[in-house]
Amino acid sequence: MNKFFSPKPLALNGGLAFVRIVTGIFLIYHGCEVFDAAKIKEYATWEMFKNNANPMLMPYLGKAAELVGGALLAAGLFTRLACVIIAGTMLYIAVFIGHGIIWNDDQHPFLFVLLAILFFLTGPGCFALDRLLFDEKKAG
Image (spheres, rainbow, N blue to C red):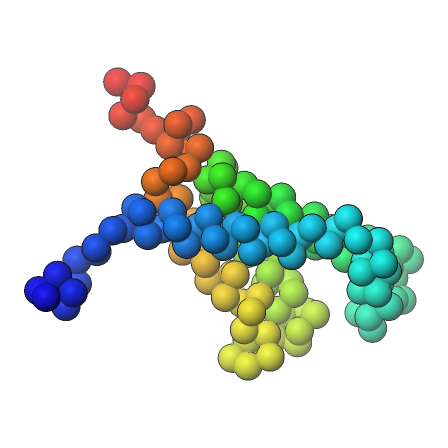
């Protein structure tokens, strides 16, 4: 019972890895809409896109960023780069597409921003390709 109330982590690396992988899978799910031309065409009719010279460009870029960022995050590959892609994309969605109402209407994309910040600061946890590629302990 002392561990339950202790401020010490119970499973820091494993817990981070679990949340990172699930978050990445959610982003991949949303990003797969990049392959749905009808959905992208629907997004292109939104007020903020329809008057652009190429109204389908931003929806395609956003969905591609979700797909690529989610895949990198789930794999734990170039985690900090993935976090920059995710945070930038989701912040744009929350602020410019959703009008910045992050405490109510736009919580979903803003939560992705917060998770990206978390993984940017803490790293990927265990089960990450970054550990295989960049772990300094194995080089020694």
